[in-house]
Image (cartoon, rainbow, N blue to C red; front, side):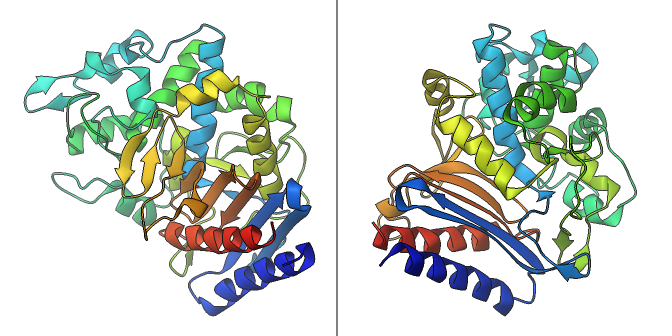
Length: 361
């Protein structure tokens, strides 16, 4: 298969998936593979009552966690923290009070920075864990759209309604709560609000002019394109103030090209050293064929489920966002379906594109 045939097939596959699925209103897909001379940046569907455009911004959901973890690595390189530091060293006592109680034992002072990064702290996940009583935060997210949350309020809600899962370092449980704590920790160390720390360390050096933090900052350059609509089912939730609850773990907004710039800088050593990147890849089995490091997800070979050809690492999010690097192909694959609970669909789109690229080698 030649280069042009490969590009045409990837585009047809992407557009047909979106056109056939009435639950997907708009979608974005970027495929970049320098060795094959391929750069595709596509959009499909409608947003803001107009055809979707590849240049539009969209919520990147939990891909934000990789930004947070890279920023943490940068602070580690500056000697401002170590991964083994207990988090209580950087956070106020009222926030730490009974933060992590498991089977009657308070483990709050045993949580280290690395536990938050790798989801091994044992803390709850405010977003999806079921509370002892009342609705989940995920339900409040859509039922109270006008409510704006601070990270402190989210953590306090978690302490009042949710339970811990295990002592620090003795398991894995995905925890958005943990990334809120990381965000506040970064604010303490840098003496800047998190959105300013992102701007100083990442957005400005990489010229990510269209990347910013929802409800905290705006793009550095005025954007001529409207932001893509985000959906929960058939309801557009793009401007829900409740998205503010996402903070360090999911509140960033970006474009496909900005995300490509970020990933290329990460893989080339322009952001952090190769040693620091390797340190972030402390893998813990998350689910069959999927491991989690420090803000990084990887697909690992599992016969039948995940063949070796899909081995890649990067990040993903709840709204159907994926941002992965495929080392064997030296390829980057970035996708957003802008629909809650659609991550598996985005992964399948990515895998189909990988299959095509492999035939073009």
